[in-house]
Image (cartoon, rainbow, N blue to C red; front, side, top):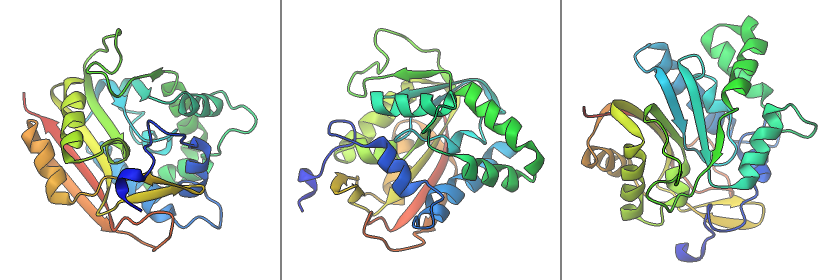
Length: 260
């Protein structure tokens, strides 16, 4: 299939619950645990444990209704603002926050976090902290220059973006354009943390094939540096298992800061 005919995350029907079930669940049939759960949890825990990334505001711009990447961050910011383009993603998140029947179960991710931190006794407390943080879930328009127009958000001390750039960027120029937009949300000296899939073209949600931007580590580094970021840390990991749901070859984690 020609990549241009693949569906687009933010423009076509994206089933956020199926995304969670396919890629982030603890079901025995799921093969993505090491890549989609353990890799981000270990990297984020390591980054935030160093203590130099913190402040008043964290903005999260990530794919789908993800929660697990915020467990490590919730201790270090007064306010976490989660921006979503999809009403379905917002509803899915709020279902979990409000502990409603049928909400996706993130307990396995919470357990991984506290085990990684060596604080298994704090499991219940950790879940409540993340639920409190997710009260700031807001609708955005990814195509607008000010994605929250007409609202102007306070500039953030940190942005986390897990896989969103990969699924919304049609090409390399698009990726650069979104990095530029994200940068405007950050204070000078603020940090950006990116997760991405390398050397990939598609991922499946149900029977639908969705677009993923094909790029490598060098491109991601250059994209950030071109927009005035300094790379602090970069980690890549080869894909653990081969599966027909996604053709990515490796995972990427980058921490960078915006020049003052």
